[in-house]
Amino acid sequence: MTKTRWQYVSGQVQHLFENVVVCGWSGVPDAHAHVLKPRDGALQPHAADVTGSHKVQPCEVSGREAFGKARNLLDAEARRLAEPRHRRRQAEDPHLNVRHVGVTLRHVLMPVLRGRYRYGNKDYWVTVNAATGEAAGDYPISAVRIVFTVLLVLAALAALVMGP
Image: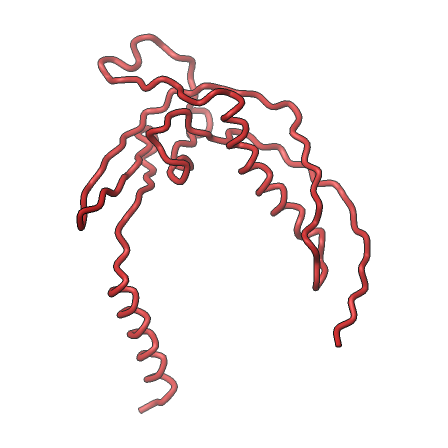
């Protein structure tokens, strides 16, 4: 029988979040937005001639919506930062009271390349930050190859255990 002794634990965690990226264009899925973070010191004031003949997509997300998306990221990180302070074997989900202070919003014009390829009658998308070259994308997953790889690893482990 397990005996549990509950103990009240409280504390504070402070963290400064900077440059949390939320994409303002619906053409980039949230799963790809992490590649759009600009390099440190790379942001410069907008100049009218910087885009040349390239098409510029307008911002489709309001500031309130952007903060709603960012809040999910910030709250998840705050929970991750608070967890080491609760070093209990059996812990209930800790209650966090997260306060966001000094929130600012910046619209940033980012050079983004979007591409699509078709494989097996399905479209897969790739997003590239044209300033840094960082990329994110979707790719096909073959169940047959996964099963084959697992079986191959199990066979190799069995050969090691059985010996010569």
